[in-house]
View 1 (cartoon, one colour):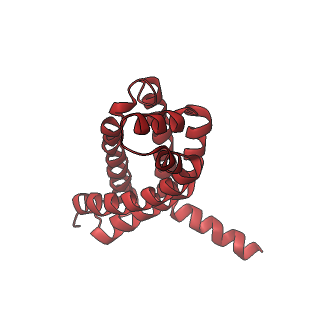
View 2: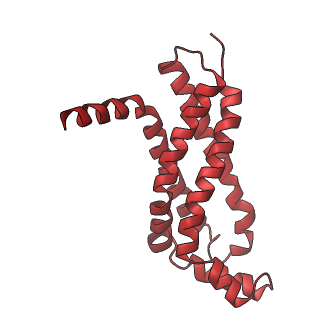
View 3: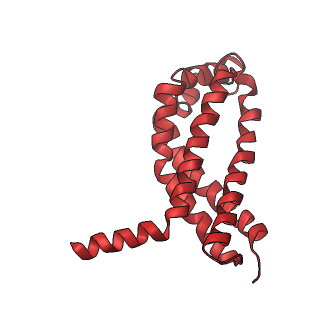
Length: 170
């Protein structure tokens, strides 16, 4: 038992930076979703949501850049290989992916509980989907799964791209 606690402590210390940046990313997601809701992108301006929601890529990439730069400076002494940066990004991605269903749940129940209804109605009213398709797509269960899958996919891509630019030879 003591061995397990010691090993868990070592793991937590080894990945402290990644966990910190994963939490920062999660907080950014909740703030972003709140801002989308406050600006009407979940109701009155829902037609613009598919366009403006993509701007989340900017703070997302920035967080990964800051995280990898901090890891490079504090852990790797100013030098970082692509592999080291990519692995750092993947660990952040895992933290974000693990908590993404919780973030989606908070969004769906507290931040914007009307989003699924509004999005489904908009899709049907504008001939983008049938009612059955919209109801099947815009619901909590589907978004819980999607949030996890998208977090993994986008995290892997972002990790690779940022690691490519943040790498630095000794």
